[in-house]
Structures are given as structure tokens and as C-alpha cells.
Length: 112
Length: 112
Image (cartoon, rainbow over all chains, first blue to last red; front, top):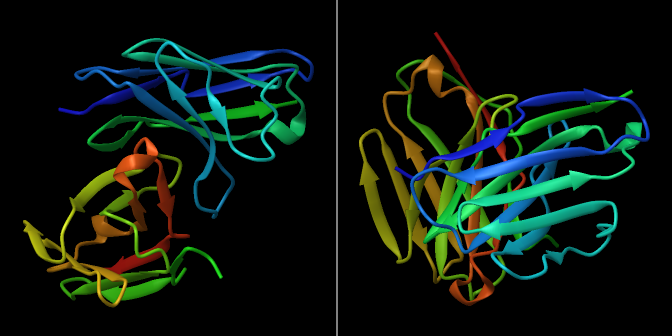
């Protein structure tokens, strides 16, 4: 149990385009989902906390207009990187909370 | 000072040895404690979680929490090359929407 999926697993896009990443809890309902970013050989950096049906709470320094989060149901949250630039290239990981956090497999984004 | 301190390693051990990992923390309000394993380019996988001081065992893994010393440990018995990964400790407050504070991760290499 406690499986979280992410789609796509990797994406390459041109600078200026927007990219949407989906996070799904497959076998449980998650009122809270989290979005993280991870650079090589570094730990996870929390970007935002997403609660179903309400606005996401962003961590300090994370641009909410650039990283749009939608949590429309108890099993789905999406992160949209708007007008992506090369510095947005990173590994994005979501987690879904059910007593504790279960992580998705991550999405590798490369912006050219 | 970081809220959660974890030696980055790398920690290199021969196959079959016991791997000993630990984290110290400064916030005495933390109520629950987790260990995650992360392989390169993958999302973290939950190994153990506990709410109380003492030991918790699951197969080859033993998690230890000492709230009085603000110190947690993870022991891996009979280590295998497949245990080579980065191990992240994490802890949180129940009241904080299950938001977690992570250690920086320890790289472990089990040599055959």
C-alpha cells in the first residue's frame, strides 16, 4: 500500500514553455500533498504544501506565480512550472501524507 | 545550526557489516521520526517510522529514538550491496500538517 505515482518521469522542454507534473496517491486518500525540489547530491527542499480544495502554502523564497499548484482531489495534485528557464532544471518530487509521507518516484526536468 | 544534523558520509562498509546511521536534532517538540532510503535519481522510500522513544525493528532494520538526547539512529544488519544508497532521517510535528524536517542525508556504500 501507500503508492504514489508521478507523471511524467522526465521531461525536456524549451525555455519559456510551461510544464505540468502530476502526483497521484494510488491506494489512499491524501488531504495533504507536498512538493519538493532536489539538486544533485543535496537533500530535499520543500517548495509548498498542498491541501485538497484550498490554496497551496509556499515556502519562503518559492515564487507562487511561477510554480502553480493545484490539489483538485484527494488523490491528485499538480505542479505547473510556468515559463520555465534553465535554472528551473531540477528533480521534482511529490509526497502524499497518510500518517506519514510517501514519496513519488520524482520527475526530472531539463529546460534547454 | 540546522534543526536536524546528519553526517553526509560517505560511509563505506564491507558486505555483511552493520551500518550505523544517526541524526541529532534541536527541536524537542518533534513527535515522530522517519528514515527514508533514496537511490540515485529516485524518490525517497520510507523504511521506518516511529512516534516513541526506544527501538523498533523491521527485518534487517532497527530504528532507535532517544528523545531525551534528541538523537535517532538506524541500524542495518547484514548489509548488502543493494543497501548502497543515501539515507535520510526526517522528523515532524503532528500539528504541522505532517510537514517534515529532513537531515541532509548520509551516503552509504556497501562493498561486495
